[in-house]
Image (cartoon, rainbow over all chains, first blue to last red; front, top):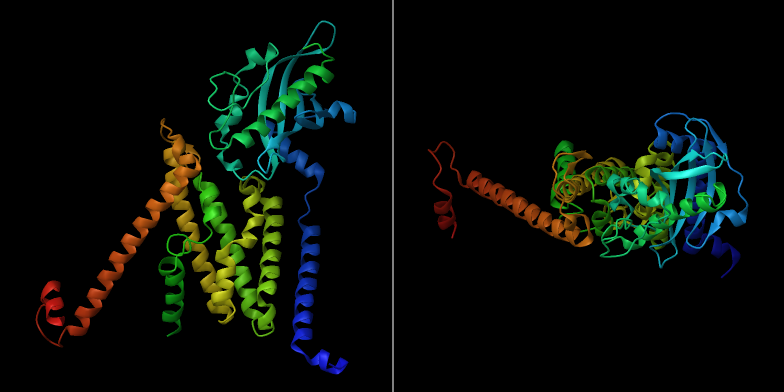
Length: 207
Length: 228
């Protein structure tokens, strides 16, 4: 086949059309990405609006990589809410669906009081708000009542308890959605990571 | 003539070839997203938008795209539309974007969209394809929302997120409940559409047999016997 024949062939035409479609699509998406880009600040403002329903003043708590990493989860960011003195933790729980490698990221508001020595003491969980997930196909099975349950066991939490996601358990700190146990596990891990971070780092091991 | 043609395309998309209840396409997303009516409705509308845009684009390019590479070309066009939709939803309706989770990008491989591109848009003009996209999408939206309403009401005691009953039957929020409701809905839909089709055929037959200027029609059974 000569060069001239190649340029006249169906193979060349097919290739050219495919490349043209991909190029046009790429340019279109690049432009749209610029137009519809959601910045980190905008995402944070959205999350705050979802959690508090209004704008609140926050101050980021500086954490080292070591202080952010836990066996079953990771703290993405932690903030002190200046309006009410509570702590807002953005945590990712491991062990979700997708061969155990899926994750769920939540916002957890830790209620606290300041003790006599000036250190924050945990009083319970004020609110848990869903943020994002990775590979959790049954995330829509988690209704508001599931997230509210985390805030209903504050006595046990203040006493040092952690949540579990164990099937057929009647433990009061067990919070599982039947049929979505792996995603429940990641949810619980995210909440427990927030509790562990507060207890071990923010409150200096006092809680 | 055109109105009749467009009416037929729309009727096919909505009823005769309803993607969910008749063709049983896009089942994975249907079962997973129908735990609540609002999520189902959002999913249905998202698929409708992608169907409309991809059908129009594919129809526009149908004479340019060589037959040998039509499937990869369709997939690139559909994926572009889905990515665009993701950006728009993330920017303007983040709650729906979060609720749809992994099923939003998976619209790319939804067989309803690729199926309509291959079976209709690649062979018909733009306006016909646009009507087909809207009708098929709305048919799917109706089906998804219907399943979502039933599952949400029985599984959570609520209607579009508003709590209306105290009872909850957990079975309807899990996978087995989804299959059960889906199966019942398909049976109901097929039963109703078959009855409608039967009634339409009888009416047509009686119209054809009615002599001009004659009195009242004989009962249907007699007409059938005469025909035999």
